[in-house]
Amino acid sequence: MAESIDSLKVDGGPPCHAILINPGSKNYPSREVDFPMTLLQARKQELISDYQVHDTDTGSADVQIAMLTDRINQLSAHLQKNKKDYSSRRGLLKMIGHRKRLMAYLQKQDSERYRALIKKLGIRG
Image 1 (cartoon, one colour):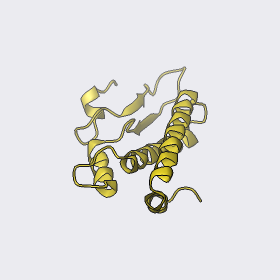
Image 2 (cartoon, rainbow, N blue to C red):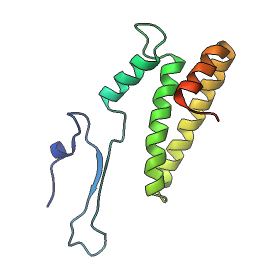
Image 3 (cartoon, rainbow, N blue to C red):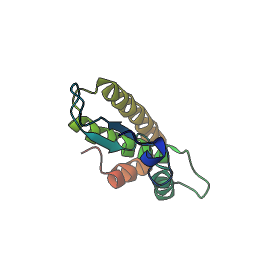
């Protein structure tokens, strides 16, 4: 009962991280986990349009922080279900550190924009 990679694609995007195990297997429980491992292109465009500073902005600190926050929220939900996934936990901690450095930079450059961003994202208290 193997499925092709094409059937695992979500909205024509990259394949989702999925674990498909035969129900008759002795060593593994029967389960299927299905979640996107990266931000889908549509979600990425939505975040960029919501947080961009000017019309052609795709990489400002605001946009990067918003994308990292979205990915951190996805990984946090994944780790609540998969407590022993230490590799993903390490990636999560690296993303949190990266977001923290970007937020420190933004706070030094423009504290008003920083406060507006954290309020809009709902982070930091």
